[in-house]
Length: 398
Image (cartoon, rainbow, N blue to C red; front, side, top):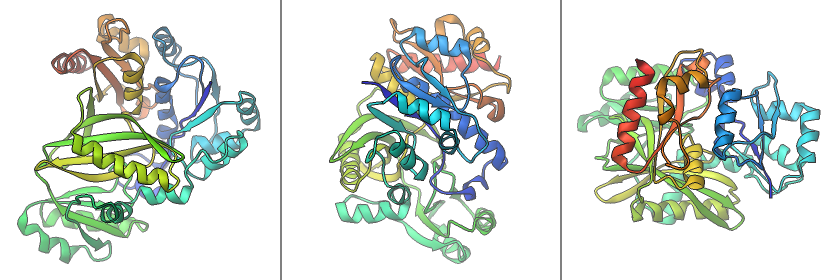
């Protein structure tokens, strides 16, 4: 049964999240469209996919030789806000997709565009209602869910964007604070506040951001581990797609994911409670749940009602049986290509399905603007994974 992937990477709310990012809105729109290329790692040869551009032919050949990706690619170009809108405006692309009669469609996120696409493809009731998607992505909803499910929660104090100075200053005496916007998306409205200067900076950013008016401040936990569990939701059930340990810096900024080890039982129990409730409420498709382990307790930190950066790595891990994986970023030149990547890292460091070892890049066109390349690494042991990661970083910067 064929699957259709529509990986339109866009956000659950508008332009306000562009403010803290180092790209103009037009650039960021292009980057998100070009990120869709990473979904090729989730495809199998019999699947179909819609992309904003034709991928690097050397890269596509590399994937196909390893039983990944697909040649059934519909290219849909346009200048609308996201790839899903471009697809809806392209009648020939829509007709071609409808002819494939897919058994299922997998979307990056479920908003109004995805709802309409599912209907046009003859796959109704396969998406989360857009109102629910937006609600699931808010911190306020998670707080209410913690209370309803009797789940341990991180101590949080609610503050308004119009009145940040006094409450945050009063909380600083016990150490730095973690301040997160209610509608944060992938950490776009998350801040480390360690002093009065940080509060002033946050006040200025909040003043430019007219949409996110509710923030939550909490003390930094002594985090032993951070995990992301991803679930595929369908009517009445949730299936664990995979889990990975998150690498965080001192400000809880996400640097990458490491997978293969079994997550703590308490973390999975908490994540499954949340995922099951989301499914019961009408959630569909992929959802990621972040959890912090502190003092042996699993605290939910965030719900992302969409696919995650590590989703392609988990997809390859599931298909190939590679014992361990890591999703990571590396700085590259803005004219980077797959052939150059292969030369620099060396043939023996490219992913080998027989050895279940090596690197698979996620995409290339987005790197032309970001200067960063996302990739997945696979190895037999955690130690070998660390060695491979260090080797590739060194080769790409040499």
